[in-house]
Amino acid sequence: MRIVAGTHGSRVLKTLPGQTTRPTTDKVRGAIFSKIGPYFDGGTFLDVFGGSGAMALEAISRGMHAATIIEKDSRALKVIQDNVKTLNVTPQVSVQKGDSLTVTKRLSGTFDVIFMDPPYAYSELPSVFQNLIDGNLLHPDSIVIVEMDSRADLMDQIGDWHCYDTKSYGISKVKFYEHAPQ
Image (cartoon, rainbow, N blue to C red; front, side):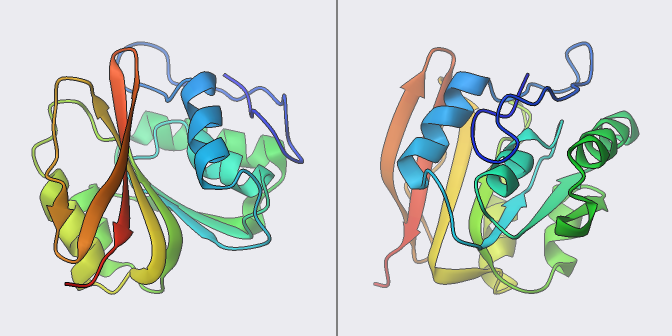
């Protein structure tokens, strides 16, 4: 796996061996950023289910000034920390250890882009999304991106947030949410 574009483009990232995490492929990551950016002049990024940290590190590489990564698996945390150190972006990246449902309740500030790629059998995703809303972690211009198994589904409306686009990439689909006051 590698950073697709930006200041760290083509840099190789470590991943956790085995089936514990399911990293977003370079192709899908590139497509997501092409849709929402592809480059940024600052901003904040939240990666709710960190894995290797590749999505947050891609955001930093493309110009976001800060990223927060949530991960509960200790081995994946080590991989994230190694990747952050390798890219020399430690001051820009905050790594939070814990379950996403719990950590999203204690975060503060707002995020411009939120990415969630939970384990495919994870049933608490609507609750995590609601935590983002209830905790005022989103602002009206935030974008929430959810990657999931192509057979799974997440409601198209969560509070004042609605899905404005869905893209399919093989066994994955990606849903994009924006604020739409009722």
